[in-house]
Length: 360
Figure 1 (cartoon, helix red, strand yellow):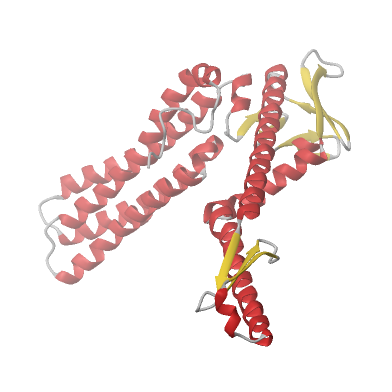
Figure 2: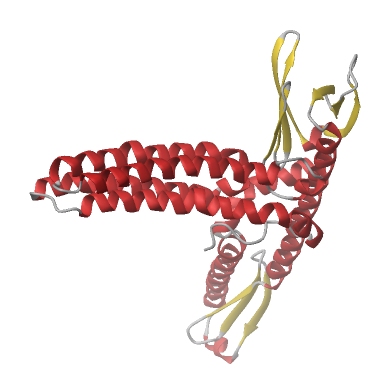
């Protein structure tokens, strides 16, 4: 699986992809180098320390531990990036700092210490490797910061049509635009104010002049009132919010249509579900539908030798067996085919989106 795709993930519009290509290409390269290439280099440096000639096996055992720690840290960073991190540019730098620092503190430095005490005649090489490790960690931090800045250097409306968690900071506020809500932190007369609103309760976004100033501020019209949020380049942030809310509405509409199509397909399959059960001699055969109601009974000449009580018992037994069989079919449709493991993970978020869209 590609960890960092060549195109921005979850973008359906070619216009958006083309408009943001100039930002995504350098950001992608910087992410690959800072969060995959340089952490891998730190792991190789730890491996180089461990592969130097050591006097005894016990020292070799201790030398392996830094390699394992550095490798696990690099693997954890890549795993996080593949699962959740790619859509959260503001977290690229903190995550890179955390993992590369762990590699240096728990991997490179201990590996250097073990190698210095055990190996002979390689002090200059060891010091060079240590310097390379520290330089690699610092470079990873710088490149991760540049990756975020190259993508979110300035707000443009097309960013609203992406799955990225957008964060815009100014001297007076911090605005975070998620996939289904917007949160902001700003300074007020009473102190710091932390608020947020879901797109379901966000009715409109406008800009206005700040009182006593020529700068523009965002005005968020919500179900609980209007909120004025200072922002750098407020007009551009307003356009991003409009685009993100429209993107959220499109996805909610698509989710509703997808659920409706699945529902109708399920009704069709349930309507076609049926089961037939027969006696061993084939004299009595019963067919039931998905509701367990008998829709057909077939009797052959074999019933002539049976008493009415035996025929009645055969009918009831066939009905029970057919109902059990059709019940298994319905269960297969509802659980195995409709609610797969992937659907089970998607259902909570999907249900929330659908309910918010219907309520709106």
